[in-house]
Every structure is written in C-alpha cells, then in structure tokens.
Length: 217
Image 1 (tube, one colour):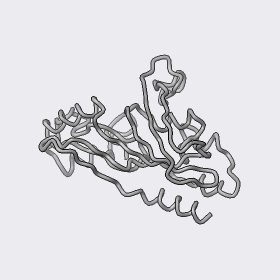
Image 2: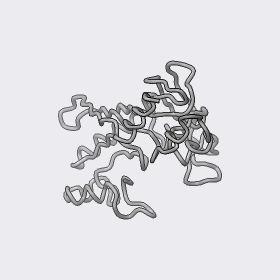
Image 3: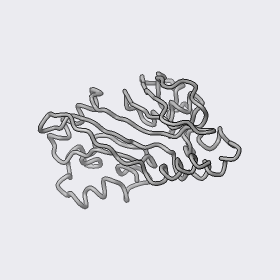
Image 4: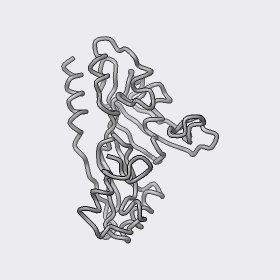
C-alpha cells in the first residue's frame, strides 16, 4: 500500500484507511498526510507509527528530524557480504536522469548513513540486519545497490537486472514478489509518558517463506 495520496495513487492508501477508522485524524499533520510522520517505500513491509493527536505528531516529527528514532530493518541482498558488519556512507539525492529514482551520484545530495550486520548467509544471497542513522528516500535500496548488493526482488534498483542468473536458486529468487525489505523494529520516546517504547513487526509471510526455501536449498 502507498502511505499517502499522490499522483497516480489517490485512493487505496494507508491514509485512506486511517481516515475511515479514525476520522478525527483529519487535519493532523496536513490535509493529504493526516497522522503521518514517516513513510515506508511501497512494497516494503513492517512497522509504521501514526500520530493520532496534534501533540503526538509534533513530538514524533521532532524525534524523526533529530534522528532519535531507532529504525531497524531486515533485508535479503544478492551476493556474499565479505565482512560481518559495516557502514555505508554515501550521499543520496535525486537521480540526474530518472527523476523518480534516487542516486548516490546526484548533483544535489544529502548525507546518508546505513549500518549493517550479517544475520544469515546463503549460497548466493545474504540476510542482513540494518540500522538507519538517517532517513533518506529509498536509502537502504540505493545504498545496497551502490555497493553491488541490490535487494532481492527490487525491480527499480537492480534486484532483478544486475543479478540475472544465480544458478540453482535463480527461479526461487526471481519469484520474489517485491523487494525483500522489512521494517522490523521501531523505537521512540512516547509523546505523553516520554519513556522509550519499542515495537517489532513479525517478518512478513513472503520473506519468511523465501528464507525457509533458501535454507532447504
């Protein structure tokens, strides 16, 4: 689901669903994005926080802006990561030619920082845990594509173009219905109690099934 209405997606978004169930959200955070303080890319599964009051929206937005929010992801990427953990520090901006894409070779870019660690290794792929220090558009997908480890199933950033054949796992990996990226944990300060809270989203069924198939293979 797209998070909020935009050209080409004016209905069927998360915002449309939120307004149906919580009509009081109208006007909190803007007319087109009521309650929304951050986004997930379309086809990225996982945890998303929504503000239900104006005060909560201001508080959460401030935390995202000051990078106080803990954002942890899980991704299945092509190739074998040589180290056990690492950091990707590449600036991100609008792609110079394809304006709907982001790039690490933009004329106008902003700093972006992604930390990763190995969770599980497979024959042609690696499951990584990721912590975002910044929140640029498409950051994880752009960063891993830039270091030649695109996310499995990502049709925009090379997940089905760069890695055309991976032997006996080819059909299995190319059957991925979306980018295999999951927002696993979200931690932030509660707007009212000001205590740290953390929420985890169980791994989505399609990713879990693919991982199990890779283990059997």
